[in-house]
Length: 362
Image (cartoon, rainbow, N blue to C red):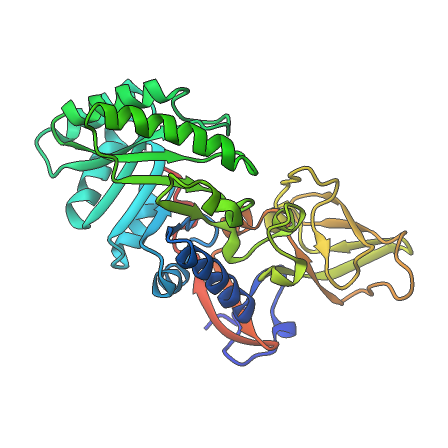
């Protein structure tokens, strides 16, 4: 028995800190809201599990109507395959025989594994291993303005599609992008040109998959897309509030922290540092939103301490021993910092779920 692990029914205020706590009602509302939108617009929805890394949450998303899941690494996908999920898209250029060997084994035991590629080298590496195995579906990753991975032109997408089709053991699965937010017109123009080229060359394109949470509710404006992927929406965070995707009331994840010191009237120290809140700023000047004290500023993080500037607070200020709730800047990274997530409803613990894919980074 772990005395620091809460039991079902315990008040959330009794949880040992620092701890990520997930509001069941808000999470369920987020899942339903996005799936309803996708259904209304005839888009297949594929949640990215990098945000939660929890099997039970992925199954809730699938039960709501998702067609499958999106993973980022092979070992991450293996966790969900072990749990019986068979439709997995890995949106990453997978390089190296050790990774591709694991990928081949994964492909043998699930029904619908898919990966992406944005170079001849990636495709050649896959073909070397898959030429005499169960065929692997490969999508071409396209840079429609996001400025990360992806072919730069529709003509390059056509060239890679041809290479995939000619490669023994590989099957062309379509086009994929992770775009910059608010660029629906640009994405649509890019995809339209690529689809015209594929059609002119008698190449069928089964899937056109778009992605991202910040502009999720503009997904229907990318008319060529057949599918959308998003991860952060399930919990939401401070960055998604700033992006206009949601409100503070839609943030299901809070970090529960305890005030462990009050060295001065204007300074509090909490037990949540960079190992709990992450050092991700994402353009903010501080490290999270203190729900109970909105004027407070988490100004500095060290590994185990957070320094909170209280100088702008009017009225009551937190005391030593008090527990406060913080909305993180970036919820996805928080998930990779903890072994377990504590779920609650109406102030009481409902369950504790292992973050099963934590640390699965290749």
